[in-house]
Length: 233
Image (cartoon, rainbow, N blue to C red; front, top):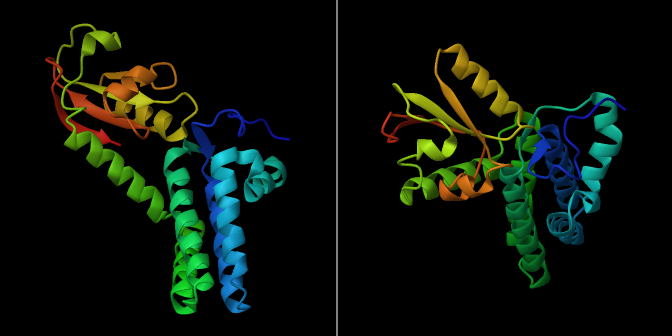
């Protein structure tokens, strides 16, 4: 087995970005099969599997197990990303598939198949292109919540260990296993910016204080602590 950076069953804040796409390919394909063979109970089974995985964890998610135990050891670990957006997408998928099964159960097959095909289409789109609608909705909602609550309008530089800033600096909220976080930090440093990183796994209280719902999040901060520009997140 090739060396893993993150343990998929222990480092739950991040996930190999290929794992959600494998899961989406599985769910989307089976939802499409359910329609083609006209067997709607499969939609209920898929919804149940998503719910079990969300509640009990990755060890109880069958597509996750297949990916982490069979595919990843052969293909290697992909870039690691924040696990919250794909988890939110799975929640939406579970809700819509449950609604599809319920529609069939109460005698509304047209609605049931429409919802099932909606999940199949979006899941297969995400698997093929990486465009995850549920993930983007999570990121948009996370950013909106932070802006609306004004949590990230001003940063207390002293509690970040930044001291007195001379000129603008960038405060980046990061996770040590997040691939995109490392890439963003390298790019910012390469642009000649002074970067102060906040590891949300070690400073969860700061993540809560500033409403950080996804990493990487980075903001440009003036010497007085006022945020002048959101760069990422």
